[in-house]
Length: 268
Image 1 (cartoon, one colour):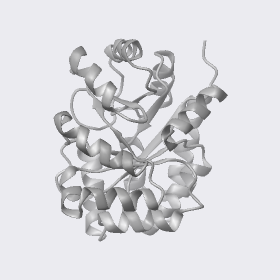
Image 2: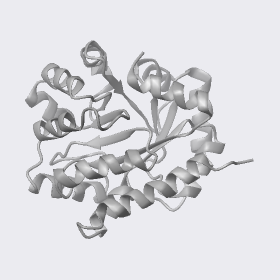
Image 3: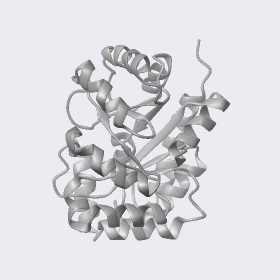
């Protein structure tokens, strides 16, 4: 059983809802990223989605695009992100899922990447621009190194294709709540509830909802709709970009605590 599956099983046994913050490695520096990762763990994150900066992040909205740009300017690279995780072994004890695009992995060597990522403690990979038709080969390579390749399901995904994605994704089903790129939204579309219901009918995978989740109200709504967790990205990244370097860790930790409270709140 993978590290991600183990964590979801543990959370289910405790009746807990999974909280998964996203941040971009190297924004504003890798040293601060190191501190933020430990702070998120301390403040109740169950998983962390860690972005590897790329110059053409097609799935990301303006907030995360700018975050990637800042990280690249600070000298962050795929190899340096893996080195960062290596320094956190034995300290960061929640599953880390690496979010990156396929070009950097192709350049680095996918098998080499998986081998090193597994060795430094990563639990999974998300590659938003990897076509579904190409996933079988790369999922097998990732699996050989005990990494889950997690696939995205969009609101516009037809039911037949949703079934195929659900059968191929590992760890959990990543349900995108909006049509378009990442970014904070004022409200969630009601069709997300129907999508969660459809996924539950066709698959036993845990369901985590991302893209647009940015408030305690969103978390409570997604919980009521039957999801198993949320991924929060732009709302965390915005707090990083809006804070002075000396305050970043505290601000991110404070926001994580607020989201943890919403994830744990008793609901009718």
